[in-house]
Image (cartoon, rainbow, N blue to C red; front, side):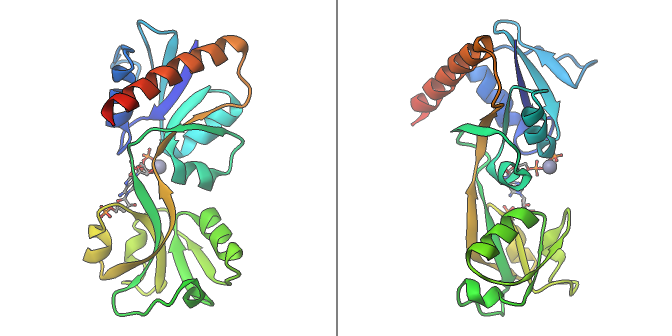
Length: 211
Ligand code: PRT
Ligand code: ZN
């Protein structure tokens, strides 16, 4: 039996369930047991988790595979492999600054304070560009940091851009393009490997049909 972890609720839930269904897999939604559900016509069990926990569960082998955003995967830095991209949950992780401020490339960030929920990705980006800046890790509502005087710069997920706009900010630089990905544990037995192959084939067929 292949154990798949998906987001319990949030931006990736609907599309994740939809993809499973499009692969011809029926999952019984048992309301009494919301942590997991069994597929009726494929040897698979679906675990419903917070997205941030999915890489760890897959690394530990509690789940064999997972659907989760690349942003979460790269921030978590766990020992898991990305098998494929799934075409939904698209967004970008971007540096944003006050509308009135000037941005002249990554060097503009030198000595600045940056608020973000993605300290590892941002630290890596700064190091790659040989820029020294102070990272302030906050878990949510990052876009209000400049308004309350915490930092001049933020790094957060953007899709339409309206959150930045409403907070008097502008996108200065994209540091990561992200979408929901299929990740897998590095240690699967032959039976699970075969099931993953089968699922992956169905996912790719569904995706090809849409293009
Ligand atoms: O409860 P749990 O921890 O599982 O969920 P969560 O609240 O951490 O995540 P959720 O459901 O908000 O997002 C899940 C995943 O969706 C993210 O990890 C991304 O991979 C993906 N995704 C795609 C997004 C967005 N688009 C997005 N726009 N995640 C968040 N946003 C937020 C962003 O943080 C900002 O606050 O939306 C706002 C910006 O949107 P725009 O349209 O105004 O630019
Ligand atoms: Zn989360």
